[in-house]
Length: 286
Image (cartoon, rainbow, N blue to C red; front, side, top):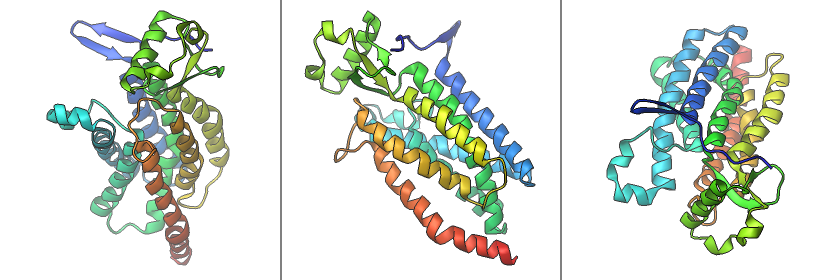
């Protein structure tokens, strides 16, 4: 099992820089750089790519926070209404994905209304290609902060509960979920670990998605290919992992992340069946 550790932090006077924030910043920087690089390889204008990226990032972060507030922490919102505007405090990965797609759609509608559909999808694919590589840094951040703790387990790839600090952490997680009675006795607990779902996603992204995208990215693909590739290879795994979550609020037995997967699947199916065939046909006749 993996030893438990607290999130690294750098204290500079009254300012504290956490590892999570640094890694999220690296995710943004690396994602923007890789998307621009992919756009150049595909003969696209990197300035347009930069515009798409920043609209996706800004609107994605806003909606990511709103999704987190309304669906993960509604009780806190009732106690603290100003929490709604604290966009730096609490984000949802799937809220960010949905927000990013909205940001991309708004960019093209407002900034590039006359761009052909097939060209738009080529730009979207430059972002989608870069996303798993940026996701590695994002999930590193979640792993360092233990943002997504799961149930206790004997699984080897888990965070050890041998230390008192780790036991206090998981005790607090189970307490907040109202599930203290489900914790094993302390002598048994100290031999176990807990699922760190951010870590599991990191490993899946690093050893499955990144190699897959590198392999598929060796040559040009039809417009929309990489967006659909990500949605169809990531979302089923995430849907399954969310059943291991402990403290997340649930609606009809599903987490907010699992509910977000449903429209993402619907969007990807609609794109595959209705949008891309028309886009490819229009591109072939232009």
